[in-house]
Image (tube, rainbow, N blue to C red; front, side, top):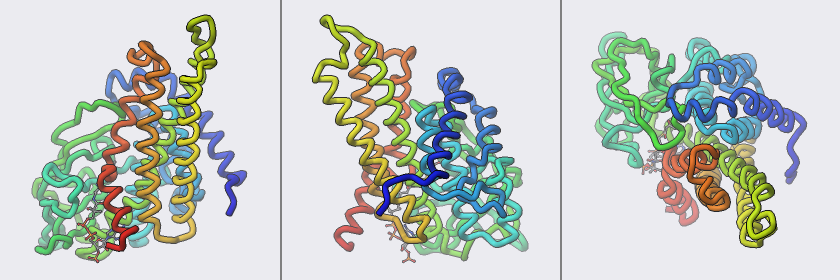
Length: 378
Ligand code: CAA
């Protein structure tokens, strides 16, 4: 067992941190306020290979490993969690299923442009009436001649109004899990963005409601086997949850960094607040939980690199990292006192951005369900 990062993993951290500090942090507050999509960040992330971190170079990716991917999302999210999720969706929810289940032709047409950073990708699983119970979806797909015709509505689709391709799921049979996965070009006839959500946090990331109204896509855009889309969705989320664990980790690390900085500057009762044990214990708890979250997240990533199933480890990492980040942002606001409650200080934004990490790509309750099933063998 080796806890040291490789030279490539260290270089990845340094280069993503340099980019994030130079290009993302200075604009972060403005994008949070305006809730506009940060096209400039997306363009630069794409050019740096951050949309296809572990995609082999022959498919347009950076050819690195999944630990490098987790480090990338951690560092982007330390700067701005919206940047983190934009990249996490492109890597984990779009490139990953295309790489794993796509034909060579599908890889050439859809994986290469996303991995190369020319296109943004999105993922559409959740519906207005089905979130945690993903298999209860109502969107249907029927084959008509040489095309699939999809009808339904998909909610909370990250990146989808700026994406060129969406990995979407629809019911193709009567049984609950008879669902298939589809590659949906966003210029397909019948595809529309119905609403952009106005969110509490990660406000620079694009979250939309999609309509598939008699939407037609070519027959060959079925991804993987017919009726096996639910398994594809779940296996994809095993990887996706590493990305959200890494996002939570980045938010928590920033909360700690800002708290340390503030505690060393702020005077009270004749000394720096860093000299009070009440503050020191909060900082010690934050640091300890961040270390644990980092180890769990990198372990899940390493298992993916070893080609081993990591459903349990990904859920453990996401559950722990997101809830540790909850405690970290709460402590950071408390350490900042009244300044933690106003927008001039980034901890106010971290507090809002963190919350969704306990909800999307499987709520904490769903992670506990997955973990309990594995532990109890149920
Ligand atoms: N890998 C591969 N296959 C899997 C799997 C996995 N991790 N988990 C389940 N499966 C397979 C099962 O083996 C089974 O296959 P067979 O029928 O071939 O045996 C099939 O899937 C059904 O499994 P279950 O009976 O366990 O399914 P279920 O209906 O009980 O659901 C669940 C399980 C864990 C609750 C699942 O519905 C779930 O994870 N729900 C949460 C959904 C979620 O995370 N949504 C987030 C949306 S994405 C998002 O947030 C997007 C964004 O933009 C950021």
